[in-house]
Length: 136
Image 1 (cartoon, rainbow, N blue to C red):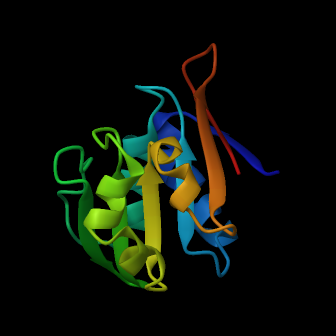
Image 2: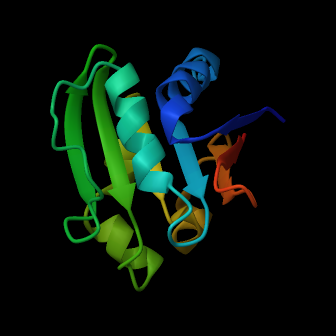
């Protein structure tokens, strides 16, 4: 397990370290409590990946946002409002996961049974000093 600790002033560096460690994996399941910084970290990671769109934000209501990056398409999911795994299947989750593109998932525990075995589990936790610990 790799751990990266960072504050807001070091988030770009932390995102770069994470991107360097991504390897060939494409599905990343970001776990963390509300307010842990999942969306904030994914926004920084998208920038490192070369997403040109300044509007990287949580797809809480749209479920998935699509971004073009230097590494191809990046799909950013937020399953917070999913009530059943079937809802994810209904909008074509497997098409995204099987695309070979980078898939960044917030609240993946709500669709855990649908994730591929090789999905990378990423945990973000707030430290007592307000910084974050990213473990994957």
